[in-house]
Amino acid sequence: MTEVFLGLGSNVGDREAQLKAAIDLLDEQQGIEVIKVSSFYETAPVGYVDQPDFLNLCIKIETELSPHEVLERGLAIEQQLHRVRKERWGPRTLDIDILLYGDEIIETKDLSIPHPRMTERAFVLIPLQEIAPDKVEPRTQQKIKEITVPDETVKKFH
Image 1 (spheres, rainbow, N blue to C red):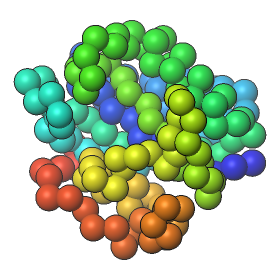
Image 2 (cartoon, helix red, strand yellow):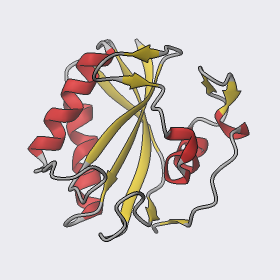
Image 3 (cartoon, helix red, strand yellow):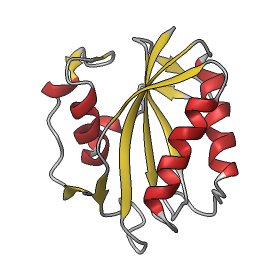
Image 4 (cartoon, rainbow, N blue to C red):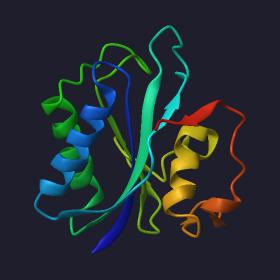
């Protein structure tokens, strides 16, 4: 089994319900077990800013699936929860990103692990530091808790 960390976000519809549904759907997948879930965090959008605020969280799963199989399952769950891809960084019912897959560094046409922008985003680092402070980021060899969080407004949602 491989330890994998995912980042989830939603800013369309009932954000909390969609994130909870995504966690349940991930946990129901053959070969995936959800181990840990961070708190929910509310954040302003990044990139394309003319859209509602996001709810974000990170989860730790254990899986026997390959990185590409995890990606495929995540994309299928996004579609199941009505994700529509119109514009980069645009509004979405659900976004699932693979942040870390074991200690691997993966660069393919459709997959980059560790997630290339995870250390630049407070809405990823804060929930990841909550559930995996001692996990080592393979590119920098820094523990997650040692990575400087960007100055963005991120607040706990409950």
